[in-house]
Image (cartoon, rainbow, N blue to C red; front, side, top):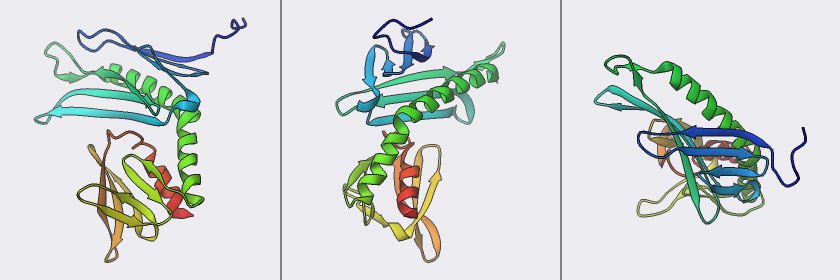
Length: 207
């Protein structure tokens, strides 16, 4: 059956109702992403965020949050799903829900990557290769290296860049010092475009 003229193909739709909050909706179509009614066309998307994080309190598992965020130059929107515990005393991890939500989250991330993430990575790398400067995840990238502004300014020259170490809260950008890779710049994992940053840095370091 053919779609009516002007109606975009629906690629994926997710719903979540955290607690007593109203139902949240994420729709991914051939035209773009819609989060709770806020629409973002693929060519206009310039900010992305996706995270899957296990949350603990005093060492005890609380829940797992699955986050997808999109944004353009003017606005952003975020969709979240939560899986928690099960059992008579709510003490066991709800593995069935956690697995199901992770599969849906991963499918959404794959679609967004194909339609927007790959473009943003390629655009950033091309800009620097052509001698320009670009911003990603709060850092400035240019032909000399990667730079963090603010009160505690730090830089890593491309020859000294040694990769990324991922932790629950931060991405640690590593730099070679005295023959060892040490954390030089830290980026919170919740920063817009942080999921894209390691690929951009690796591509610029390798060329």
